[in-house]
Image 1: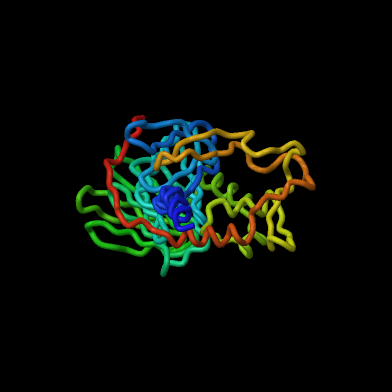
Image 2 (image 1 turned 90 degrees about the vertical axis):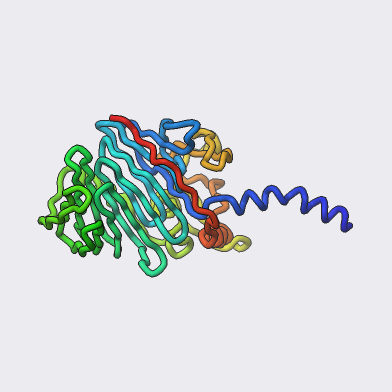
Length: 314
């Protein structure tokens, strides 16, 4: 019996080690209009991005001209305008640390507890720290060596070699001037890109799912739109899709891809929509899955990696 038990341990040891190496938090590409590219591996370079492509630490996302994209990380949405590069330097339980070398990013934040989680967006000219839920915008123009930080709603701080200042709702801070930049505070104004970002928020409706799963779980925001919760006598709370085709089957739509750790993953290309509720469409998203999500969120990296920041040429 001991030999059998030892053999079983040897058999599952690689899987256990692999689970420990998995990133504690992962984002996803939630929307693409036009064309976008993703950078995960220096050996592979830039590759075409798809809806539901996973994004984690040391990954980058790029939007082509006349294109837009949206990255979701739990209760945070990063919406990118055209010709924008977004580098995710660090993504884990405690921090979302991003870098915007060029372009425009709209940031929508929900469920932020600044005592436990930090959201930082760096630019070549200043650092932007989100302090509360709200709507924010970051503009970076490398040709003019300038960055603009806008707070439509919320509270943030901007820091550089020249010091730190607070940015309140309705304000834009323009940062320029090279190594020791200057700050100019202006009145915030919205343009068509901001109105598009606001229109995306109208699809982000939370009703009951946050009672069953953590808002730190990436993808939770789609559960209310595409399904319902019910109590099962065996599994407890169970979520099932309400708008799927009668002949729906897993792995039918989407593609296989490798993530940063060269693990094969499935990225579906079709959200659960268009169709009707099938009596056999329940899936195993239960309180057990919520416990796993909380456990995964409690894991963290023990080693910090650095790499040169990739650049997508215009």
